[in-house]
Length: 392
Image (cartoon, rainbow, N blue to C red; front, side):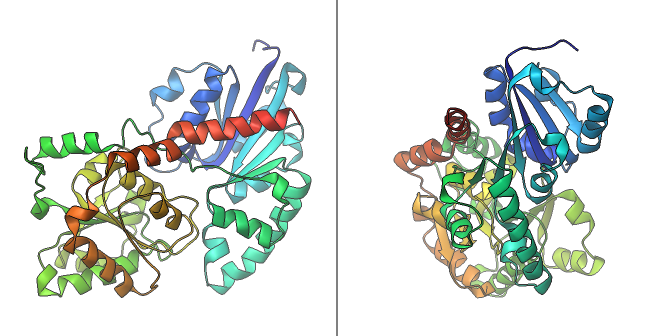
């Protein structure tokens, strides 16, 4: 292996390879453009991923390892030593990689943690998570104070939580604009063209709502609000005024496969459409009348809400730290403070009854969302902070 003098090495360490490729691709590409050597480390592959992705095969200075494989290379001394790089950076995402990054094999790296959201550990009411939260808070406090150079969060609520609970000093915390959305893909013109092609919209810009779905997109879990969505949908189905509405569930294939026979039978009987999530979600957004996000746990910034926002698709959401700020920035739809399913039902009805108002995205609002949450904004924010900290 040839030595590369003076280069910067960056490790991207996350739970799944799927997460890194889907949500950190723009950041990795920018690192590569700058001539950095990028090493991806993951604990497992994750869902919906193609190992033959050209992103992997056609890039120089990009290396991919499972965590165990990386450790094996360390022991075999096949990983370049510190002296071969002018700077070594490690970006860790979520709890497990953040904790594992404190191991001695990463001793020589500048460490940066990104909290993609505080998740169910910090927001769930279940006693086991409440106990675990205290444990994780103490681990975070120790690691962030002693080992990590800086911590990134995706919203100002998480920012205040870190400070209010004395988990880290304000000098070590930075707010970045999410994981970044590809505005060349997620924009009103693209969704219009796709709808026109599929006959969902005609040349007079009139939507055929009879072929569109009130869509839940996410994991089939309690914390994601899946059962609240079901309850809300059923209350609408039982209302003669809304009985013609079509409902759809878009979820990872693994979650669908784990559905009980009883629930499968129920969904089929009530005419719910259940589809597995694909790598390109535009196919679902094109036929989405609205997106329902009844999430109850602490997300960083809801990617589904952001994608919907840039496409001009209304969102019906429960109040959540990773969603509420997006409505301030202009995404279409409504948010409810009511934790009961009827709170979701109420805002779905409100959107349906004023649909033209909720499905018209102004150019200025789109530009604001794209500029604030696009790939460039997220990537540039992270790199600017890394470069600033390098001079301190």
